[in-house]
Each structure stands twice: as structure tokens, then as C-alpha cells.
Amino acid sequence: MGGKSKNTLLFSASLILLLSLAAAISSPFELHSLLVRPLPSAPALLWSDSDPASNSLLETSELDKVNCNTTLGLQLELHHVDALSSEETPERLFDLRLQRDALRVETIYSQVSKAAARTHPRAPPGKRPGFSSSIISGLAQGSGEYFTRLGVGTPPRYLYMVLDTGSDVIWVQCSPCKKCYSQTDPIFDPTKSRSFSGIPCGSPLCRSLDSSGCNHRRMCLYQVSYGDGSVTFGDFSTETLTFRRNRVGRVALGCGHNNQGLFVGAAGLLGLGRGRLSFPSQTGRQLNRKFSYCLVDRSASSKPSSMVFGDAAIPRTAVFTPLLTNPKLDTFYYIQLLGISVGGTRVPRIRPSLFKIGRDGNGGVIVDSGTSVTRLTRPAYIALRDAFRLGASNLKRAPSFSLFDTCYDFTGKTSVKVPTVVLHFRGADVSLPATNYLIPVDSRGTFCFAFAGTMSGLSIIGNIQQQGFRVAYDLAGSRIGFAPNGCA
Image (cartoon, rainbow, N blue to C red):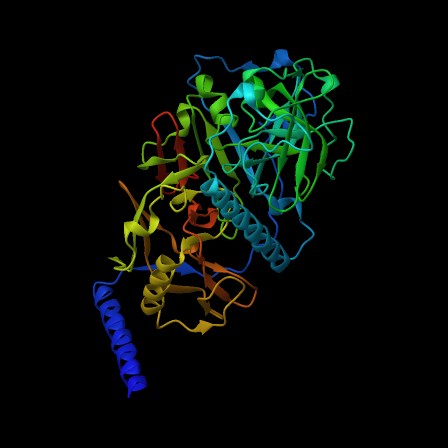
């Protein structure tokens, strides 16, 4: 009798849930058209003729220096890391992307857990532990998904550099190499640069590292470790960086003489996080702590993605949401997610309380350029998934694929109607194009709902959901903006 009562209760609860979902998506029901395109091949790696990247060297006199009074923006082309693996099949490229994604997300969650467990404050500058086997500076969540080409040194040598909003420390492989991974360009030689300068151990820049270390000449050392086992170690120094025809001087960066890992041909990394050593923080006076990027959908366009620094980075058409602060972690970009709509109606079980930052630093929502698939804390994901499944009940289902548990068979179709999805941030409603949440996973016409659940309290807005928007980081105004159709 007890078992029957339990089954009756479960049946009643399920019926009530289905009825509430059905009522939530009742007419009028909003739909998007999704053009059914196959998995893209690796994009071509082309740079515009106006970019001096085709020249390995340019004299300093040919370039314009960015000064403290500049109001002009620096502009860069971005390319997906897949462009450095042109020999791989589309299926293999997608599989590698999901593997990188899993490593990055796992390490982000590990860093949040460690920060939340930290009960003691950092040691003051004068009482830091001495350097022994390693210095960990910045966070350790992987090497990012997008890269550009910029000049390092004077005269500038143009190198492929990964851009990453989830990292702080800037670094580049340097000769002489005790150990260097394979990269597309020649290894940077600091002895051939007139602007290269080491940083003394006692300087504020060296003390900005989580731990400071010294070599036998009392010059600063650094080390950054990443979640996939990659590592870079060497001298912490200052150098000039050249963005097309604009120079930015005295940027603190790591000159790595011992590096290993999965950096896929890039020479180094440009950290774009919120920490003290990131590029936006270091260039706050020159570029007003503002930058933005627009990531194109590779399956729909051959146009490159782009990044802008300075006042010109902030589009007038953007809707903005305030940046939040996590006292335990200063690198990530936290924003407040209030809810999600499917088919034009709020999903009732997705409440703001699911996305709050706890006192211990757990929870919250971050925007990350290096994570591909958006992760939502599991109760929010299940509610979103169930609402979407109900709204897409007329579409033919397909088996689960990798981390995706909601997939559809669009074989033979050129276009399908799918429910709309809107992310409701504080002060900003962001309506996603259909290509930002239903993506191809093979060449047979299988598409999957590009969200995933996580047992962690932290949710991550990934780059698939950011495609086509100009995402504007206005650190001076403590806000993030989203401008649709921002890649034009």
C-alpha cells in the first residue's frame, strides 16, 4: 500500500509539472528558424592586407605609440584555435573542442573550490614565502579558444597569441629554451629586442604575483600552470606589444624558457581577466579599461572574429548588466542571471537564487571566452532542458551525444522551427539566435541543445552562446554589454 501511495504521489507530481510547463508555453509561442548546416571544417587562416603581420619585423619609427591620452581603439582579428589544425576532419575538430572544454571547466571548478576553502588571507608583500619549486600566478583553467597575431618587442616580431578572459598573466615562449613546445613562429629572442627589461624582485609588479620568486641576479621569476597539464616558467619582465600599427610599452609579461603543453602552435597568451596583471588592468590609463570582442559562427561565415580595445570597444546598441565581485576570486567576470525564457515565457523553476555568489565564493555566473558550452547549475539546467524539450516536442529526437542529453535528427532538412531562448540578466535581456543553442555534432544531421548541467554551484556562459554578439567589457563602468549582430 505504501508503494502504491508513493507511485501515486510521483505520478501526480509529474502530471502537475507537465501541466505547468504546458501552460507556460501556451500560445503565443515564439519560434526561431534554424538553418541546418553541417559541422564546419577548419577555418582558413588569413589576415587582412592592412595588418603588418605579414612582416616579421617593423622598425619602431614606422609605428604609432599609444599614449595616456588616447581615445582611439586598438583593433585585432581573432581566429579560432581550430585554424591551426587544418588537417583534421570536422568530427575530430569538434571532439577535440569538447575535450578542451571539459578540461577547462573542470579546472575552473577546482580553482573556485580551492578559493572557497581558503580561510587565511594572502600574506602581505613583505612576508611572502620564498620561491622554491614553483610560482602560481593567475588561474589555471586552460589556454583559451581564440588567438590573434601581435608584435612583441622592438622592433616587433609578430607572433600568434591566445586571448583568454579567464587568465591574467601575459606570457610568451622565449629563447634560450630549456624546454619549449612546437609553435608556428620562431621562438622570441629577448636579446634582439631593445625594449625588453627584467623586473626586480622587490618591485610592485613582482609582488603582484600570487607568490614571488627570484633568480641568482635578484630578478623576478614566474610560473603559470594550466588545467590540462600545460605549464610555462621563466623570467617576469616588461616589453612593448604592437597591435597592428599601435605600440603599448612596458607591459609586464612572462618570458618562458621552460614550457610544455597543449597550446596548439601559439607562441603565448594574452591574459584578459580582471586581475592586476591582465592586459586590461595594466593598460587602464591608456585604453580606459575597455575591450570587446565578437565571435563569428564558423558554420555560417568565413569572416574573422574581432577584438577592440579602448573607448571604441563599447557599442551604442549594447544592453548592459553590472559586473559583480567575488571577494575570493578576482580574475573571473561575474554577472547576475535572473532567469531564462523558452518560447517567450519564463521557465518558472529557474530562479535568481540558483545563481547567487555565496559568502564562501561558490556559486554565481561568469562570462568566459575560453569555455565553449554554457554550463548551468543542475537544477537550472534540468528546468531549461525540460521546457525546451516540451517546446520542441514536434522535432525528431536523436540519441545523446557526449555531454549533450537533448539532441535532434534533422537529416534531410534545410530549415526547422525551434523555440526561442532568452537569457535574462540584471538590466539586460539577451535573445539567442537559434545557432547559439542548437549546434551540429556530426555530418549526418544530428543537432544538440548546447547547454549542459553541472553539480558545481558556478554557472558559465560559454562562447557558443556568445557568437554573433559584440560582448563589451567596460571595467571602468563595472559592466558587461551585449550588442546583437556585433560582428558587422
